[in-house]
Length: 156
Image (tube, rainbow, N blue to C red; front, side):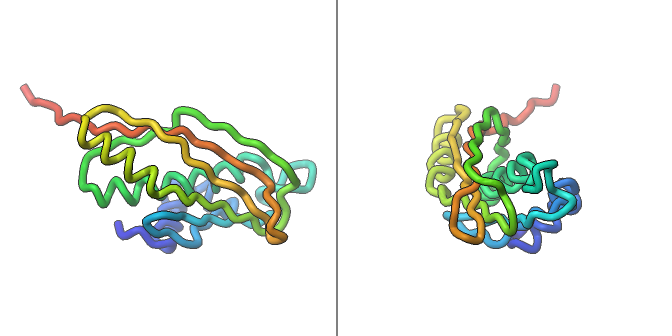
């Protein structure tokens, strides 16, 4: 798969329909940064008239995970990825369009290089901050990812 916003959004529709239905969309992706947006709507609101925290989490996770997926594909190695820990903080009601950005492509590169070179699992923490249209941070998510080179199974 070529990693474009259009193809990632189609991936959401087919593989993560709850994210797609709640309005999570990839806006841009390159070697260092992935930007994901989500708009506060009826389908993703909480009883307090702001965006439900889990919807923000889906958008934040996608901004970090898409970077990893793109770089794993470019490495042409069989590497597994898994979120092993998550931490989030919320500082303001999320209303309107919220933009989540992960700008740590260099950390993904280093972790993948280490995993391939050593054959050992690697962990890294990627951060995605949610920013509203006023430029205020509404939430911040840290995802601890585990990356492991899959070993070829020997058939007997």
